[in-house]
Amino acid sequence: MKNPAWSQRVGKLGMTLVLLLIGHSTLSARSSFPSMMPNGMVNRCANCHVRSSGGGPRNAFGQDVALALRQGPAFWTSALAALDSDGDGFTNGEELGDPDGDGVALEGMNVTLPGNAADFPIVVSPPSDTEAPVLTLLGLDSIELIQGTPFVDPGVSVSDNLDTDLTYTVEGDLDINQVGSYTLIYTAIDQAGNLAAPLQRLIHVIPAETTLVTRRESNQLVLSWEGQGRLQVATSPAGPWSDLTTATSPHAVTMSQLVQFYRVR
Ligand SMILES: [Ca+2]
Ligand SMILES: [Ca+2]
Ligand SMILES: [Ca+2]
Picture: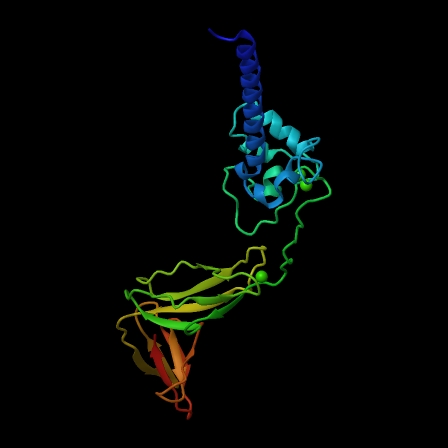
């Protein structure tokens, strides 16, 4: 037969064991909270408690964590990360190195206490940049292109005091099928908005074939040609050649003893 007094004692002991087990379980859960948020193990209990050793009153962040825990054990969310529990101007996510609250800490973040307004990340402002990029023309600043020939732009190089991998833009309505002179303008801008001094390149689209006809009229030599090529003059067939920019066909030249050579490009 069962001893009622023994049974009652066992019952009380069982209750005590159950309560102890529940207490241990809660303690284990609390001690594991830091590991459930990004960089939580850096400052451990000091994240949520006024006393850095843990226990005792919760700080402002600890109170927000307690509220979040009412929604479930996965308390670290984008909403909690977006709060600035201690009011120091930095969100909990920024202080724990996970600004968007996705649970993945960013590399190299300065981890501080989200419940202590006296502890916050040190913001180092990037140096202000007032220096514009510098362009260097690659290839010649004046290129002759035979009409109808594809143009491969040598481009420019871009250097900057801070930014790397800057690209440039080029403007100009080059028509390789139309004889004429075209200007290409290169520019670049850095991330701070500093505009590089623009560079130019002249592209002369020259006729594939041109015949220069000369005839003598009195003491003048009349030069005529077809198309829109540029008349050039030199004192030697080897050059250097200079554009007669205002000359159009027919063009009269006063004859003299000076030897001059003409061509159309
Ligand atoms: Ca804060
Ligand atoms: Ca703080
Ligand atoms: Ca710059």
